[in-house]
Length: 422
Image (cartoon, rainbow, N blue to C red; front, side, top):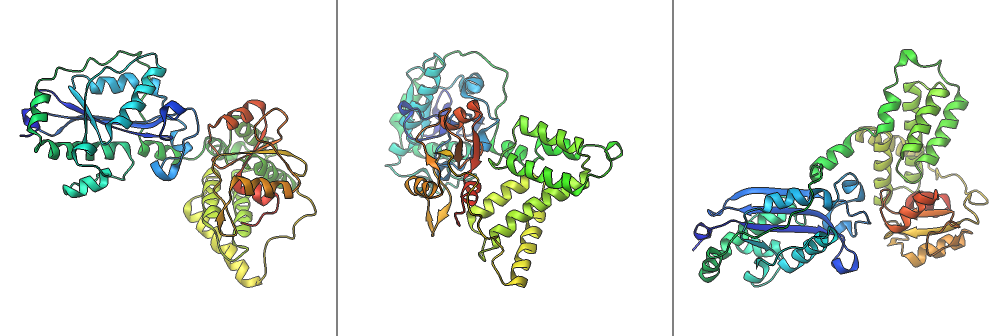
């Protein structure tokens, strides 16, 4: 017996989350629902990234970054749209349905609403256990996309469900007797779902401040600025980019400064290229570019409106200089770090490597102390500096640092500033 014998459609759901425990403040960061028709096909779908208003957890699992969800709606803003998709369904299904359901229950509870009791089907249980990818392989089902992408997983679970129900006549008979689920009603907010592809297309666009800088009409520009003005602009740029993002205040300051100092668009582009070149020279100085250094260079290049081709050219130039000179290009370390005596705090799982190993929090604090900084456990108004691994982090520490106006620095920038060679 197949789904063609079922009176109403089934909602197959999948969520990606910041962690495993909604009762320990973990949140949904992506949700998908695939509605399976009576004939086993897909009737409609819903998917959206969700901004959890906190750190996003292990990116290596779900493949998302804070920048991916930065402009995504919060769950409260897409809950009504999701419920519209679920309307008329008689049961929910998921691969490990308890996990997905408890997260949805937690999210709706935050809205003062409650998910109704309803018939649930677990494809993992019906398949005898195992990961979704393994169970799908047993039934010759291929994933349409990458694993741990909510929509791809929900589609795969829907196809798996169709196969499993063919061997479950009693379950099919039970499903035929079910009435549509009475889903709750929540306020509808004018917000559109955001997919991974849409988010990343937005990220590929020039940053707003770059559009403003390069959009200035050449014929309205002041005469070309002096070398001193370009150097001063570079110093301001360095400070603005040390946390690897440009906020509205910094954006306004850079645009205003470029205009006041008479920098032409060509000079701005040259200053940005020169800044990227300095980072590249430092990266290749030890003969190789680490994964951490390459990620950082890509991030800076995008912020500065430089293309992948531009970055490749800069790295090739830096490597050529290294080969010609046959010497370490990193300048001799200064006598003291400019951060000496500052009170520093760390947030997020560290990403950089030291002596071939990921830097642990304990080692990070030890290296900072050796460089003459005072390590703090939490962000207070007495803190001078917050070091973060994710420029768009929404952790409690990052939020407080921005609220208090505390200086924020991206992890690779911090290690370079205190003379730690990665």
